[in-house]
Length: 378
Image (cartoon, rainbow, N blue to C red):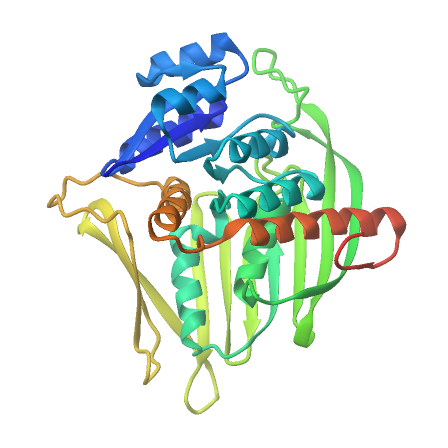
């Protein structure tokens, strides 16, 4: 029996990610319709993907019978559109953040619980393959307890916070937040808004830096850093996430043209760090579909730790190629599909998504008042 999926919001992200991904995953997934407020945009989206288009959600549900709605709308409309989809009886995959305002998130969660519906949120950063193998290693316990976790410009807001929290464990309870957000003048830079490709003129731009310290139960600490130009300006080339644990540490780093994961435990004599080697296995020695990642730890109990790509191909070198972020978003989709099919919780879910947004807002609130914020937010 197929899982019937409707797109709620015919915007750019739905067009370049969600609709193509549903079709690429294939199998039991069936894209059955699209709903939008604009007839022109809904019509074009429907024609582009060969599915019926609607501006009336009741009619779409009546005529196409979807069980899942993928909600991806512009600006701050996630809360309103997400609630609308849930009120119409759809299990939903919500774009990030779950809602910009916490009261909107609470309304969506309450309505879904009332109707026994599932919610997943498309928070993909901690679902990328390199993060999945790190989290599997942490689950074995060979690193011991993680004491502190850092987002060093590895992602903005809720994205960066979700990565930082994933190292500590999503069950770690945050207690207090200290934030400092500041605006600075940058430039001139090629990525500035005043840059003219035709004239070759550089442009000045503003940078907003966000810095936060989050205290968790049991003394754990989360450190968060972000720059508003971290995704697209060569002046801010460093992106990383890291953790410090009882028996080792880990560092992921992204620099222009280079991506690396460095994990270390301790040699048995305690005199030197012991690298954990991560190997990527593809369909062929020269490329192809990602099959799995394997970590060689040197640990007696867990010498090998493996993460298998759920979309690994058995096509003998002819499988579909999945870019890491694309693969991570596909895992978000399948988390909801499996939750609906098996009546189980999704792997991340609305409460974790709400917490990531709450911490992002708390950093900003603390910065404005100059005082620490005690959670939960009032």
